[in-house]
Every structure is written in C-alpha cells, then in structure tokens.
Image (cartoon, rainbow, N blue to C red; front, side):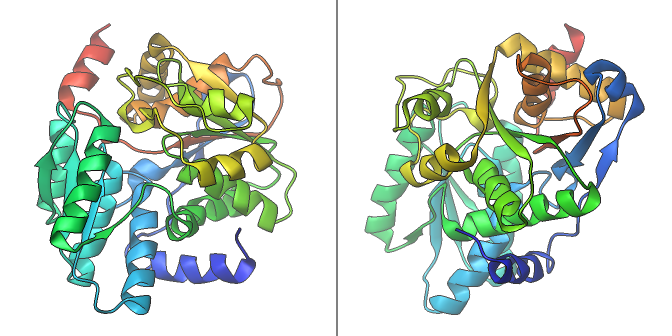
Length: 317
C-alpha cells in the first residue's frame, strides 16, 4: 500500500505547509497510564488536527495529475474540511464542504475562514456525503472521499515522525473515523518493518468499524449517536477496512463517559485541550483489557478543535 519512496515524497509535499508535531512523554499522564506513554500532538498542526496532512498531499497530487481540475467538494464533520480548505486556498482552488445539521459551529467557522463554501445538509455525515456527491455532478466538481490513497500518504507522515521520535514503541492507539489514520499507521509500521501493534479506538455508540473488524466485512449501523464527532461513522469504507483487517491488532470501544474523562485527564496532565476524538485514543488505552503494563505506548491526540460549549460541559462535570 505504501513504499518508502511514496512516504518520502509525501513528507516533502506535506512539509511545505505542515511542520513536524511533537511527541511528548508527560510524567503526570504516566502516573495514570502506569506505563511509558508518548502523546503525538497532532493538535499542533496549522488546522489543529492531523487531517491537514492528507489534504495537503491530496491537493498536491491532484494539481499535478489533473491541472484542469475545476474545484473540489467533500463532506465532513470538520477536520477533513479544514484540511481541504487550507490546501485548496494555498493551491488557488475552490473548495465546497457539506456538513450535517448540528455540526460543530467552531469547525464550520474555521472551514469558512480557510476559504471554503459551506453547505449544511442532512441529519448525519452519511447524508451530507450523499448530498456532496449529487452537487459534484451538478457543478462538475471533483469529489474528495473520506478515504483515499493520497489522503493516507499524507496522514502517514505523522506516523513516520512518531516512530522517528520514539524508538521501539510496542503499541499505538489510534482513533478511527473513516479510517485514514489507522490505515496510515499500519502502512508506516509495515514499510518500516516495525514490531508495533496498532489498536483502533471507536466510540461505543459508533461501533461500525469495530463490528466490521470482528466480522471481517463491512457492517453498517443505523446511527452513530456520539458526541465524539470525529469518529461518528456508521458506514465503513471497504478499502479502509481491508487495510485494517490486515494490520490492526484489535479494537477498543469506549463509552461516552470514558472519552469525557480522557479529555479532563489530558488537560490536567498536559495542559492541551483535546477535542473528543483527540482524547478517545487515551480513553481506549485506559479501557483496553489487553493493555500490558510496562509497554511503550503511543497515544495519538488527533486534534484540538472542540467547541467551547463541549469543553465547558466536559470540564465542569
């Protein structure tokens, strides 16, 4: 899926807009995890989330291979849209983003601030995605899917950084939304020839990928009713699932209260403010029945784009 040459080229493209992010070992956090633990701070990117890496790589590849591209459209809950908006603005390309009703107002404003046209449609991400596909045909725009090899290449750059920053990790816990993050971690682990488990973490109320991993085939759910908007998936991507089934060790399903507690822990121990999906990897480590004390653990804080109302409610509990 990924070659050393692919990874090197993606790192060069991503570096034009995204500097490396730190991986930090926090002593107070280790008092809680009970094991050597490094946090990969993808909340420190120009959009406050890891997705920007995929957008930058995707736009660079697209502009080279399709220089006549008229514009892009995609559906998102926020971070994917910010990624495309920032990269599209840098490339001089128009970007339209469709979000579901009730989407994060802060993320909506951020996408618009980066230059995207914002359209609100549907009760959830899947409905927004279907609307984006219809608009693409009507407006002759290129649809950017939530999972694509070019997106995975870009996201893989943070996994490569992590393994350079921290040698001999035993396990990495990764939030799973539509699959680019966990697929990228698996691809980098394999291309570097490392002996490191990759564990997927989902919300218990949005278990589609965990169910699909167990069944070894896509399993959709009727709802994805979780406040962890970054992992609110109910229809898995078959290509992402193929990689996950091949390379993931297991999945952990986290209840809502587990993610809220992880948000409070991360703030208290690192003074970083995570969005819910940015905290769910830690929640997965704390809830993992197969976690081993003494292992060298990587936790991916995938983003920090939480609305003030969410942060206030969680921190005041």
